[in-house]
Length: 190
Image (tube, rainbow, N blue to C red; front, side, top):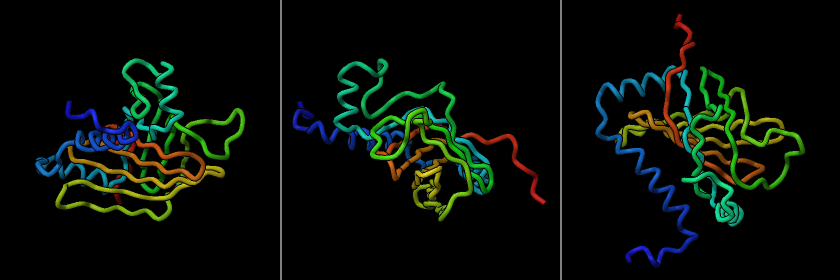
């Protein structure tokens, strides 16, 4: 069998690569899809409906999966979160999120506190880049909530697939995959 020599430690990297490839080659996007994506990014009034959480598959996460504590079909590196009441929104100059977190906390966080990733505010160091040759956008910024600092990076594709990469000052990184949607409360331009 061709895959018998793949180390288990390489499995998370392989899954992330597969998830990136599964976003599809956006270089063949139609002009309508490209225009729709350009408008979403220009207006900055969109939501990412997250469907999958992709935590770092650490030894602890693998033990949880091995113990059967994850729902059927989920793994240490990919957890279905469809139907949960989570969100990631850009509303003009404000970005907000309330996402479930799966993984290891390194520091901070007390009892009876929200264990998910939660923030709302004006992002710092906001950078929006269009990858012309690949037809997708990257949006990166920093934001804080209470004592935790986040570095966020988004990849937005013309087929409305979206990836969210989150690095935290207090916990291991996590990624999310979902779909872009337009928010209905876009203010009229003056």
